[in-house]
Image (cartoon, rainbow, N blue to C red):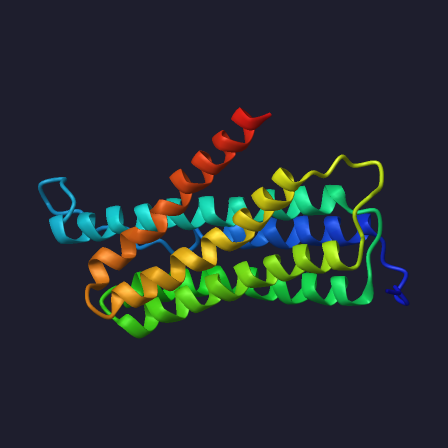
Length: 204
């Protein structure tokens, strides 16, 4: 495997951090402010919609955070980069930057299955691109010889790169029957990640 671009691991990490910083900030942009009546109280329907938006925002924010943490964990293990690894990274970031847009689309058209489907598809592709980065790193033997990588770390990283797309595939399937229920399914990613991390720490 070669790297004709001369882009090292530090360049890729700095660029990735910048993109994540912008993507995670854009999530909070354009939140609809609920209307306040003459009595000084917010309109009940608008307030309920805002609460729903905030819940989806928190879930999406944490998911992007999980992408970043997992990416940083993978990158920290690498000794070098390759052309393919760089392009996998760029495509991964393309989907990350699309998450705020699909989040906004889902907020505006919260009863439209196609809007939520687009949100799911972007999350699925982002997750599988991260899975591809990790798989490529193992197959191309990019792991630093100074890093103690055992089977548990390999399995944990595989889980961390697949749990998000798998949950969104399930959520998308459920949305065909119940969109309201499907919107809550991605929240399962958070406890699943914590449990897997706990199991790994307990083994160690």
